Image (cartoon, rainbow, N blue to C red; front, side, top):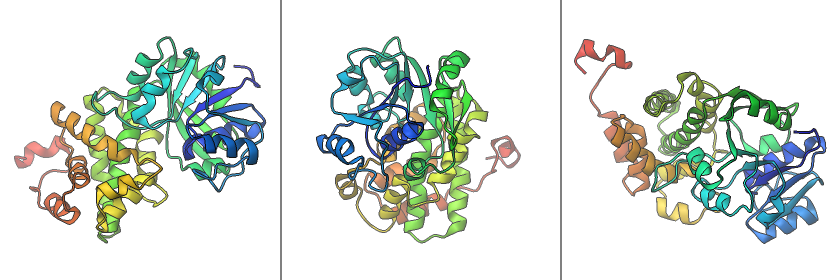
Length: 338
């Protein structure tokens, strides 16, 4: 990719808008596709996205469009749509691009597929990469220091194309070839962030949250191992790093959803009232099903799924606390008969 080659971003929610702003920070032309006509109009006329990222003043080199055809001829597209519509949007592209960088975090409901599998079917011929890590949109848009994993299914050759195009002084990608691991980290941490929000909403304290993060990370590692992810990937930015960030701040949509659930709000009301998507709510049921099918113990994920289904948050947490005592590490379980 040449230094001034245009980049496209599909999806103008908070994260897509922030990525477009980051990419345009060096004067590069960025074409940003938005679903809502009012978002297209505001970005082009006012250089703002008041619907999803009102705090950011956007670069004039960002051009918004509501037509996917306007992305034809752009070789690198960052895909930032909600996970559940990613396949449909990509299938509507007039021409598959050379590189698709998936920035959506989730698992497809119904099929149980990771986003890279969805993208390969919808956009055959494109080289697939996954960008994931501890990122709050408003901080990226403001140019605050951020580090992410850029997992390249096309290996080192794809990395050499994409890294210079995506890296900025305050936005630093690190290479991985573990696309599966990068995706699992992003999907599972969203569900665990809901659990941490529930703990906060119930007023159970910092000790409980720290324990939940640690035990949740164990669930992430077990699930990743079952799907062939590399442990090193999940202990890095797109696994543990992202988990710590989203489990510790109300700036996380998933944490905020969990906090409201812990305070007694109903999941149905919260989901109906949210314009921005808490992906963990869509991921939890399919993740719980996949874990059960593969025999992977994920009690925290199952608990979140139950709460989202209408169960009492306080009762579900009590059930978690009453589980049989056991070894912390699976390798020690034989010593205590667990």
